[in-house]
Length: 74
Image (cartoon, rainbow, N blue to C red; front, side, top):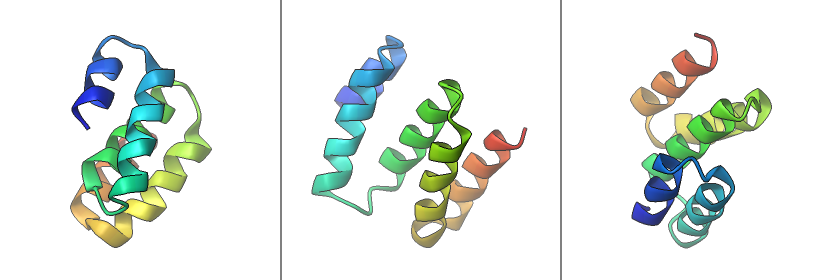
């Protein structure tokens, strides 16, 4: 997760996406990896991909899912 976060801070979103996806492959219920991935998709203008992460998140942690949803429809 830390590597994905570092890449996102450097605005290297493609590497961040790859890192977060790797985290999710290893630990599919890692809430913050899904949230971070959704936020990166949103920054890139891919609202549909962000919504896909929201759909996964709402089954894991409704509060975190709501935060992502609010950002998508801000």
